Length: 116
View 1 (tube, rainbow, N blue to C red):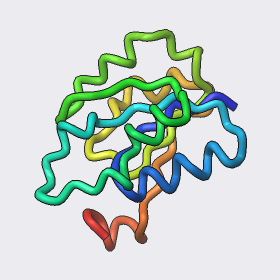
View 2: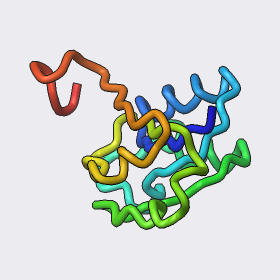
View 3: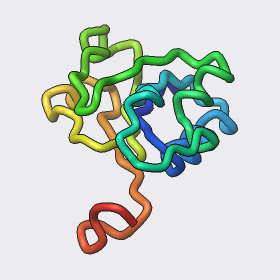
View 4: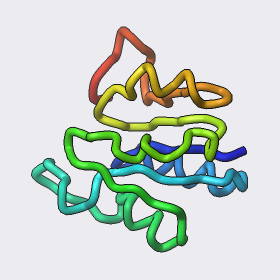
């Protein structure tokens, strides 16, 4: 299955690693490490560095994202999966993917929305 993965930081990295361990065909979208707006940067938690180190197809987005990668034909991917992504994926984009989109969240929603 071809997955367009939108992820960031530690939780995004764990999700990306799981996708790779299960041999999904993954294209990564993340924020470049230089755009991290948090006071403490831990590059061991870098989705960007993992994608580069593992030769995964990679798009980087501004913060907030412009979603320029969605100008590519959606048929390249079967599903969108987000994990620790900081912005909503445009609803109109999700309908064009074969299986739509899914979000992985660290806590029970909506009760524990936000940082967990």
